[in-house]
Amino acid sequence: MKGSRQNTLIFVTQLLSPADSVLGFVPTYLSPLSRRVELRKEQGHSCYRRFLRYEAVLNRLARERGQTSLVAHMCPVYFTLAARIVLAAGFHSVLGAPADA
Image (cartoon, rainbow, N blue to C red; front, side, top):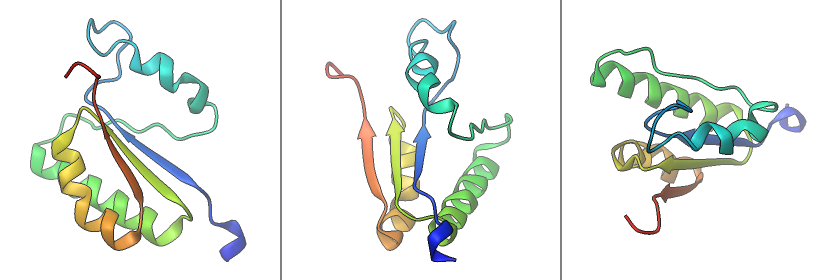
C-alpha cells in the first residue's frame, strides 16, 4: 500500500507543560501541529523501559511510514539512541537547542 504511506514528524522534548519556566513555550509551538498529529507522552517508566518503547516506535515508523523526520529538542541522549534507526531508515534528523546553549 505505497499510496497510503504518510509523512511523519517525531518531536522529542524533555517536558510538555505550559507552566514550566524554561520549556513552557513548547506546547504553544506544537499546538498548530497537534490538530494533525498524535501526541504521546512517556508514563514515568524506567529509563531502560522508555528506551525500549522509543526504539520500538521508531522501528515501527521506519517500516510503516513514508518520509519521516526526527527533531530532538534539547534531548541529545534520545537523538543518539535513535541514530542507528535514523541512519538505516534514511530519516531526516535535527538536534535542536537554543541559540545561546
